[in-house]
Image (cartoon, rainbow, N blue to C red; front, top):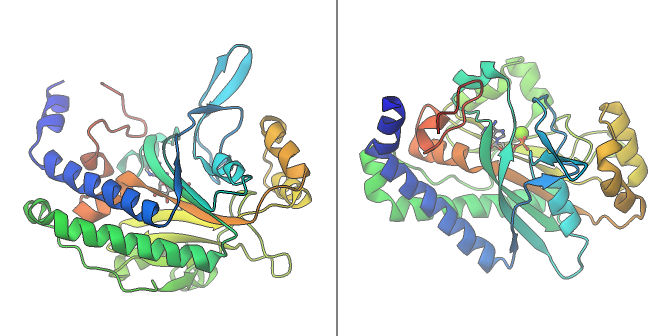
Length: 305
Ligand code: AMP
Ligand code: MG
């Protein structure tokens, strides 16, 4: 218990929360100016993000129905775009991902975190990439000017990234750096950058001819690693079904999502999501993600409060 009290009351927590508040204020201001509307998070639903990696199941039974705890809002934000009168949405949602205990020392994994999820109607991957670069510049500038004292006492200086961010292809990086490419290139770079074309979940669009994945990640420099993942979205029912089969995604819980997809009414969109804690960790320069959380949920560790 002493450790927990010390964690909550340590002086730098105030500075970190100040930076986090500035991130969220500048996010909301930017979205307001861009005419995006905010959704409230969904925490329980028959389906959630299948994720591209395995986590332990987190579901409850309520009134005879099995409901998943949200792993990300991807499918709900896609469905919210069925409306004609919304051109873009965002949501800040808790994501529960019961990650493997071995990830406790990664410095960047929690089993509950907050994700800012954004989706733009009719956008291409490059539209979304430019949108995100403008958002990051806006947030970084605001944090730099409004959190001068906090950053100083944390011993952190934030450089404004130049835009457009550099873009790398994941296959080329793997050829050059091997399996550990993400960490190695992140150590080498000095500003956030894009890495494109990753094999991922069924909802990330695939080019029908080249079979390249029309998706992207933002990687933070200095070894901080992945900060955002996103894509243009798959809208074609037959392609979605084929990709679910290829990925061995059990379609049972996605019944209502698939019924909607079958009607052919899913709209072309592009979007992405970034973890709030990972961004705050990068901006404050903290080694461990748990250092930026008041109540960290570290994989494999007991939850005290
Ligand atoms: P994903 O779509 O799975 O890449 O998740 C979107 C973003 O959420 C990632 O780019 C990270 O910034 C963040 N994120 C994903 N998993 C975790 C985790 N276990 N702990 C903290 N942040 C995470
Ligand atoms: Mg990712």
